[in-house]
Image (cartoon, rainbow, N blue to C red; front, side, top):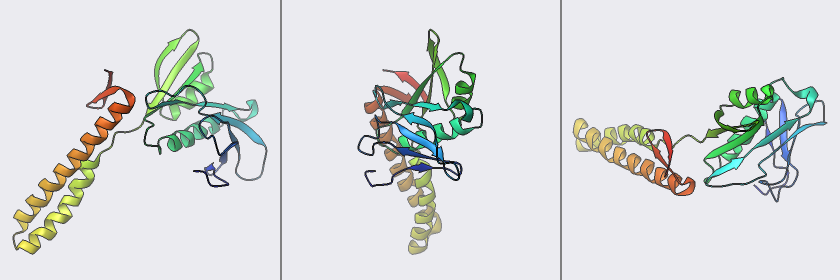
Length: 195
């Protein structure tokens, strides 16, 4: 990530870190990708990062709001954050009266988590890994090859499926345990609960 010229982009905008040496605390500059070169806002992960969760703040200039740009910025920043192994949740806070901010977060997939006074908290969770499904597909291929080699398609198919299903289940279990060790939250059937 330390290479010169690092940025996030969509069809409409680019988001460039103001300090590539400190991507998690410095502001990222939001600008249009083509035509206008002016800065239209900032985004930042600055703030307290705990248990696999990072804060996200996005601020767009008044005349660029209500165009879907905020949602686009939020999605790009969340996708980048979730590329990191230890990040499982992105949290954003917005004032209750800021309907446009709330709308942008909800369109980006954020869910209301609570409020404290006039400030509402929203967050989005990284999807859990699903290696089992991948390995079932691999098991089909391995099983057919094994079956053709053994001259017994059903035996090979069953052996390939069972072995690959076991590998996928073990990988999902390990990923779940790692996530729980980082976040301190147990993950059961897609639901979150504090330990």
